[in-house]
Image (cartoon, rainbow, N blue to C red; front, side):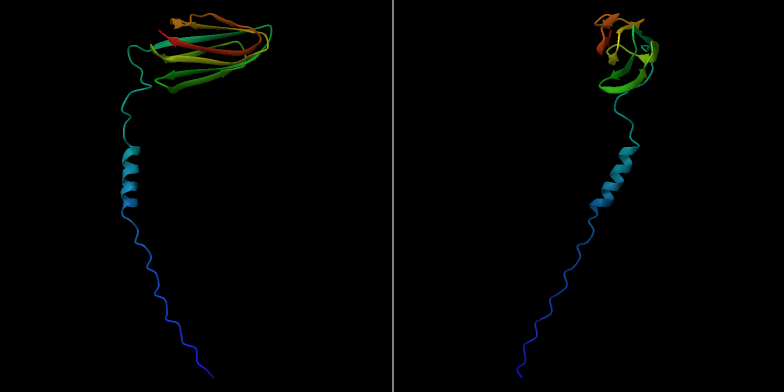
Length: 136
């Protein structure tokens, strides 16, 4: 009988130690979660105005969603499927109102008491209702 030589045992690989960066990242995340925003977006002040968006559907029905944006951030979102007034308690100069939806008959959008570009009332025939208004 011939003996076969034994193979040398392979050394076990060491597990890498956990990097301390993970704990540093956890601390950073918790610190940023409590940080105040660097600019005020949805704060009411002396320049805030209460605004009404009047949606009137005639000879049919429809569905419209009104969105209020300030500095690119959505502040208010409301929808209606009947003729209605949508009340916005805090609008400021430079805000953007977006009205999007559909009407089976005609639809009229009126924004009061503020001035907008383009001016309202704005009339839409049957089909898509899409309007974007900048508050002056």
